[in-house]
Image (cartoon, rainbow, N blue to C red; front, side, top):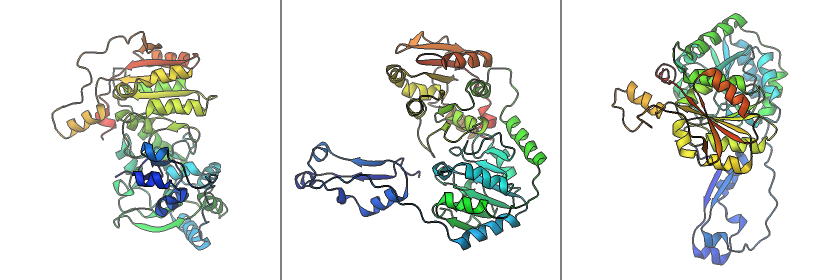
Length: 423
């Protein structure tokens, strides 16, 4: 099961607690320990009578989280030896990398040791994906292409790899694993874990950067050929306006420094593998096996947090049906936000799985008839149609210059998901 979205959850109930007064120190010690270790929100579930009760002590100022201890010198020295000895090492960046105080140290370490790197979805953009050592995202669309290349490695170096996103067991096979993170890795005995370094991630990377540069057998030509193979596989030939063509059009329209927020479904896999992220924290998606409905609220939050940055929301029609009321929120806030809806009339990820498993299609068709023109507006927000890549690119460009949100409905053919998303 996935971890909760909050670092800590606590549930307080009962009139007796309310009469006695709720004390800050009443929180479970184990929960408090996890709150200090894991960054993230803390959710307290309070009945109304408890929430309104007076506290019987002064409320302390929020404590700054304690700095993690640095990893042991011997552990890091051994990690350096493993990297230096490998002939075909590959690094895989994970979600913990997003917590780095100095994200540039990740690129410095990768370049110093000539480490080709792949990423999980949440780590995209921690190093510019135009980098010559970049291999792309793993375990999303065309995952078998990525797995074959990963299996050519003689060492996998997990850098902040968080198994909440995707477990190592899904893809690593018998390849040796060197894990470098802030906490011990959670893996089954079947994973060939040869060494791990646990401690402050910034400190670990800085010390790895200071080690003698490692050499290996990877060449720039080998890595470039893999990138071409991967990107070609993501875009199978087709005559219709495809989902992948729509994603490419949005990428062209959004400036390099722009932020993308997207949702959960088949398009998640396609976007994660296909999109090029160029800077940290510009690629926003919910973690792990989370539910639909993140894209539009996430895009609104991104724009509120970074009002100076261009932001685009990209989501499927099923996700839009779930959260279209948030269009009114975006209008009320007066934010510039293109909301691109990939209309393919299906809950496509479930549809693809039903087809692959030779099951009848059930409960996945959103609309039997073909999509026509969108309405003139949703809750007073203008709605546009885009039936080609050029039209979509132009519409997104105009919407980024608008004085408020814009809905852009792109009617796409998503049949290629059968080949790309569930390969």
